[in-house]
Length: 473
Image (cartoon, rainbow, N blue to C red; front, side, top):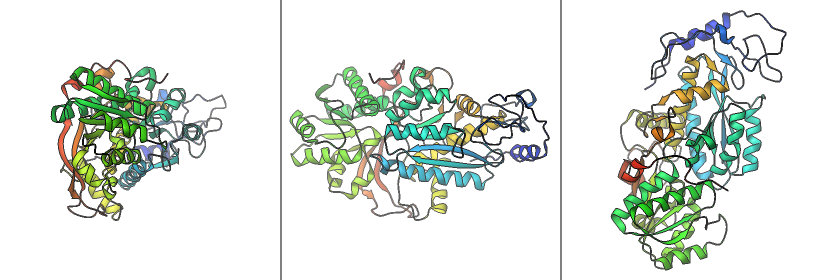
């Protein structure tokens, strides 16, 4: 599904052969190929005045590709470094680790097919432990000029964490793809250089509550973590409840604190007699609360924002309860559920390169991340500008083709015009779950039946996005 461009090879040959004069004056941020900025790595930049302009069509392909490419940080003659500020050891590690693995496989695939602009793409992965100070520390490494400096961030895990670096990203001219679906990223006042992928927690909640209310009743309990993640989802649920005329029988926004005693929350849910519960938490906390409520006889339905659930809960005592009472809301198609170009590619490459990897739907999230970053880098190279600012601009110009794995994505124009409003809803189906399966097992599944998707509720379609649904005080 990818065309490797002949001009990439021609550019590499031209760069090798080019002879540029040196300049003893203080260099600008964008430098010519023989001038090295103070403290930065050697670059192979062309003077902007000497860079050939490219004729770019809507897909990002060029009719007249530049023979020289501007660079500043994170790009050398041989490589392009992409940063991943990822939770590999914190409360969302079980979610993030397979996403990172699939992204690494994606870059192996790209590099084996010629790389980008004659360069190998190198993912630089640092663990943030889902800790804001550590996330900021990692950002200093990525945004610097050392051996782990990068041209963009392919992943920024965590809503509070990404919010903590949002202004720094603008200062450093760095773009970031968040592994967080906070509605503030599309708000230029909050996430100018944060390029959200798929729909937001807020809109996802609108879709979820619409479906649940149409099928299970009008009494809803809402529980969430505090902060941009939990409260963005909770605010979307409250907006939906008001518009749909639902009764909020328990408002537990920000009541669920990770690691604390969840008995009070469980008691409130049981006593509420809700028809369904909408959650914005994580999977281990969901297991504790949902299991505790079921043990006390609660039989309402459950659903929530995507990071709240993990199919690995089907290996626990919660499996039978989830089979009866949980509906999974998420942002993409799931593993090997169709024959779209994107699905065929990710399944084939994961099987070829990680044949013994445990089966996991989250590989698709990592694959989508790679697709977006690759298309942005190719467009930046076609523009003759692989600087940090050039890659950021390229993201604002492309429409990313996601191969049918999720709705295509753009960040061009007004946010209300381009935000994604679709999500997916799946029923938990134990008969479709294969315990211990690997990606190579034909016919193996992660336990889902598609109910709706890509699905956009009337409320989501009519939603006028003017800013984040939740803003921390």
